Length: 441
Image (tube, rainbow, N blue to C red; front, side, top):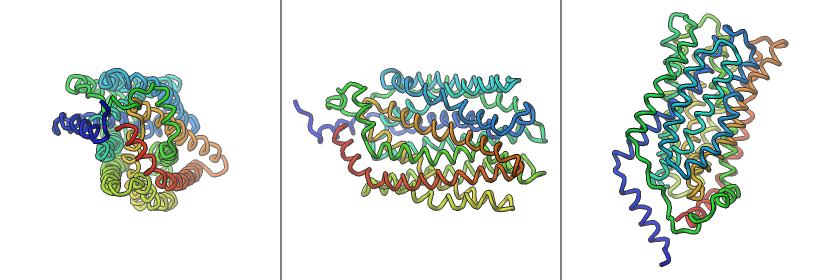
């Protein structure tokens, strides 16, 4: 018997209805907490880098490699085979094992006594974190219908600002009083992740995979589904746009503490860490939620909203950021940075939702992994490393403060390019969305 589009939609809706709302909310909450630990362990090096630099006698280029490419290279490449496993085997098990690995390597980072040991530990953190988001996105896509995915994945993305906030708070608490024991901070934020992995494994069940399994797309070999995915213009547009925007975001998040400590000597470190943590946990978090909520609402009548909302946010935020590294008052700089953090949160939910909705149903985890492959090579590997190398090259002529200021100012270029690509993508999403609905049922 041929399955009609109407029958398919009813079946899919029945599958979503079989999952209770409280349980679905619980899974979203615990996966968001897992993602927060992801960013605690990722962000912490950027916060602690002034102390690591002084303790190990490093230059900005070495710090840049440590914050960027050492972490990103295996994180990026290992994500693809892990996503292949996630499209076939238990995603819950993969997330739990990955969380255990990256948390353990974060704790091991605190035991490093040389630059090489610390670099190897960061590579280990990257390998573990590669198994976090692709299977988590796939799980959530099987718990939420496509009309609610931008909102659900925006909430999941709150793990980014909350994780960053907790990293700042933990650092402020442990480093209080001028104690530069950066190793203790790494141990303290790494070990609790292992306990969370156990809780995840014991309380979250592997969900039924979504989509209509009777469609031709569901029966297509995975390699053909991947090949099809890579021909979708708006998938590529969203991937490149978020990569360019995140290039700036990763550069800023891993170098702003260094900049503030150099540009404003004598400031209260604990107060600074708490202020930046609050900004991330409020303005950035609200921006992530707001971007997803607006996109879900606007997207009901115009699918191009998935590109327009991120573009409009950055149009407001980027000029504020450019001013933030030029002004001479710390509080004014933080206020301007707050505007960027709020508006840069807009693109997370829409981008990740589109990566899931456009993907053939058999390769949803792979879609996110490929998304992150491009994103992290460009952004996570490139942003922090670029700042470190450029700052070192400018230091002899301009001094450490101005060299870092000029380097941070340069990331406005990829931000502007991101705006252009988001707008280009917005014009192509409606047709690609319609084709995905017809293909996946």
